[in-house]
Image (cartoon, rainbow, N blue to C red; front, side, top):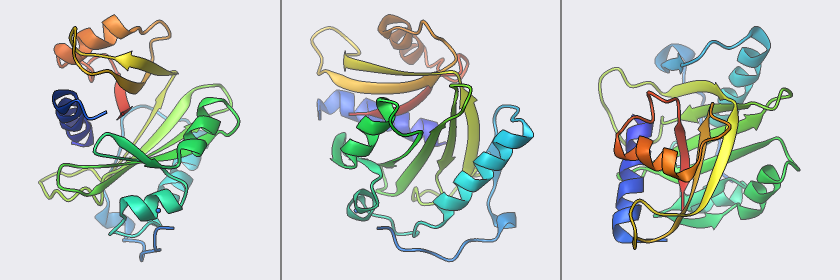
Length: 201
């Protein structure tokens, strides 16, 4: 569902050309939080992912853009970066091994992606949609997956003459290029190709 919401956000951002410490909340019981591991993780990585999820659970249910930015999260609202740019830049430059990205659903709820580069160079992402504002059957609050590559496309457009955006994706394709990603997007086949849209600005 989180992927669908990011996809909808991406579509809205593309169509429109639209280029702070979270309070601690009581941790919800583990049995009330569905967790999906969409790839096999070894025991060590599972332990790392569990620690990352626990950190995400410490943020308040009413997390806002201001409070997310104040914690240092790379915070994006309505397609615009509102805080934490320096932390994303440090992560992208390899100066730090992790970053939390905060974006907002169409209902205004915070969606978090905690990305950590593992020692083998791959990327573990733990996604948290407990605050996204949606209620539906079989909701999976947390997902955990490892990808081999992180790719940033600057000046990305869906079609000639449309607004340019910066798009960041996780994938298992070292040679993933803009044309290939554009094809996956237009064919709605990103899931099938194990491509995860991390953010659009």
